Amino acid sequence: MTVLLANLPAELMLLLYRSLENIDDVYHLARSCRRLHDILEAGRNRLVIMRSVILNSEIHKYDVRLCRFIDVNQAHASAITEAADRTTGRPDSSVFKACYSTECRNISDEHVWEIVCRWQGLRLIQDLYLHPIIQQAYSDSMFPYDVHTLVDTLKLTEETPVPALKDCLISSKQRSFNSEQTGRFYAATTAHWLAIEALRLAHASTYHLSTERNTRYSQIHHMWKDNEEMSLQESFDVLEVYDFIYGYLLRKVMGTGNWYLQWSPGDVPYPRWSDMNLFVNNARLHLRPPDIIELLLMHTWTDEPGWPEDKGQYLASRGMFDFYGGSVRHMDTPFLPDTYFSGGHLEVGVGLKLEAYGGEELSRGWASYRKEWPVEARHSLFWWATSDEKIAERIREYRGREGFPDRVPGFPHLSRRALLEGEVEPYN
Image 1 (tube, rainbow, N blue to C red):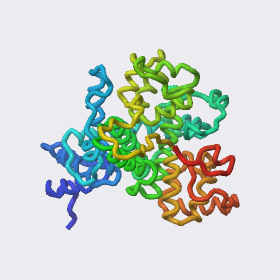
Image 2 (tube, helix red, strand yellow; image 1 turned 120 degrees about the vertical axis):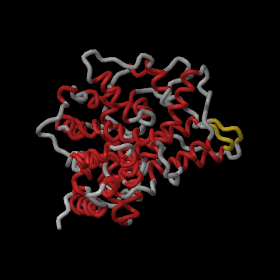
Image 3 (cartoon, helix red, strand yellow; image 1 turned 180 degrees about the vertical axis):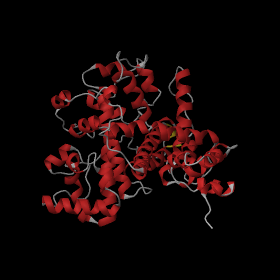
Image 4 (cartoon, rainbow, N blue to C red; image 1 turned 90 degrees about the vertical axis):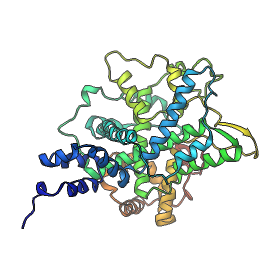
């Protein structure tokens, strides 16, 4: 006897919902028939279902910790906004430890809805990534990866800005992601967003001992360049998303010229940057994906371009002027942590993953492959990099095709200078 889906008991329908791994699939299933829609809308079912999807899906494995870090950082930002002294209200370092922990599986109702909104809101960045006009501009763009990169500033100036919003509406010629690609793009975006929030909290925290501070920054280094939670495929995804959001969109929003000096608040004793490149590289460490969307809407996609009314406060509330890596009560070691991060750390992380997966055969080819990334991987990665094995095959095929010599040992910090001069440059 055939049993129709609509005739299943409500309990089984609820279990079916809770077995899904994608928020979009929840809505797709609800639209399949009226009874399934009614099950979703009954009582607290929507909340229960969304919580199950979030906690059971690899797509959302960074979301719970991201919510915790965002809550603490927003509370601290509010405190320094209301206080005359920027050192006021610094959270204790134990707060970082609690946020960083992966053991807690509890998630509040508020965080469930926050994640659902994030899933929908970040779709704008994905749509921009897929739009043919943006795709062409991004593919043709060049940009520095870190403060040491030699870059043709004239060529940067001549590049076209981000296309206007009216030109970025959904196009009939636009490529689309399937559900797996959508999940990968989202997971990569939230993975790096989590690393930014963690760095923000480390900068803002008060530490009892300097060794404790060093431990926190060591954890952040692992998030940026040696993340054990990530597969080889995920490390490639994060690098591509970073290139698009921070290498392309953020730099285009910030533009060129000397106007960036206006963003320093008057109470900052000295500017951290001496040119536009340094300013953008610092901004990459503090602005989150929603900030970049906001600035696009305020300055680029409007008939009357504008900026936040208090630009210095806008950046200060995002931690851009916490220069000193937190406050330490007792110095029990003379060693200071490295508090600066860049795209180079992500590149090193990919090299580590390649070596772990296939040994030096793969890692030695990474420096050359990254140099050719705009041709080999930019905007095509999410289609061909379907597994770690596919990535390894691609690197081996590239080495065979290009005849790349083993001139770059290990996995260097890949700045343009290191590549052009053929030498390994320590990361900063």
